[in-house]
Image (cartoon, rainbow, N blue to C red; front, side, top):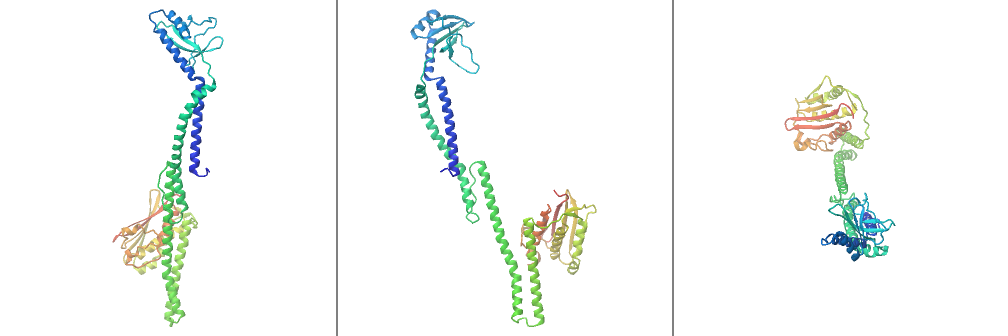
Length: 455
């Protein structure tokens, strides 16, 4: 019956409310036992008699006290300022009622006991001459049943029932306030991973709001991940479709005899080889990217001399640079310290950046590699004097399969658009970051920041 969170919250609130009401009822009952209605009525009568005695200005205080004692059947005692008895109207003079002592833990206590331990209710007032006037009667004997039925039961039944009903209604709304947002989170979670899963309205207590925001953030990340996966599959399919079509077409030409000469067969074989190599590189790049994403890529940290690494990358491109008529320049600070990194992976990053720069730099242009210390990092920049990258393309330059070639080389395609994404992952695995600065007609600069010390 109480399996849901809402019912359990309501039951918890209800139990707390009932417990509080029971405690209040017990305290009230104990108070009524110690100070029942009969006692309060008796004290009011004593104060009335006391006032009547003090207001009798036409006769002496002793006479007024004796007359009031007989008329109202009360005991009147007059104490001196030293608390000695001057007058006691009680018939049994041998039963003295001493001046009451003040009790530290009890305020406004109107109960005193005589020498026989009989309890008296009294009203005391100090007179102008510093003497004291006490009006007292034996405390009325009240049956516990009378206190319960006359004083306690009506109060509890009336006020307690109203308080309990209102409290349970408030508890019900509090339970809904907490449980309803959680139930919406559960309903939305059950709809995952379908498109029916929607963000949940943020409401309820602060903790529930934090949970809802975290859930909505998770849905947003999941949607972005699914969109990325769909785009990834679509891009991979698109990138593989072109070389596969070429391979299939030229293979068919060989099989059906269309390529009937040695030259055409050689051309078909060359196309098949080139397109197969292209697909092989793409598959290797995809596997590399997947390992970097999963954190399982083999990255071995060793001391790396960045000057030697950059010069090695530049030497690797000497033949291509000479054919393209492009110059390359390496500028490394003389005091550049050794960093801890994976030299092969960094060489892969800068090889990719130089390769891109070479592809988009016209004949007579310059590719520059520079390394220097900036704060607690090493900055390695790769610059070219090409056409530059449009501003709108720079925001996506590190996205997978994204290519800005159309803006840079008249629509000519180069690779599958994975090189910069892999470079970003490798730099991130080293605790660094990579960025691009470019402007149309002003060339492009890629900047790689690597920490001097690994955290």
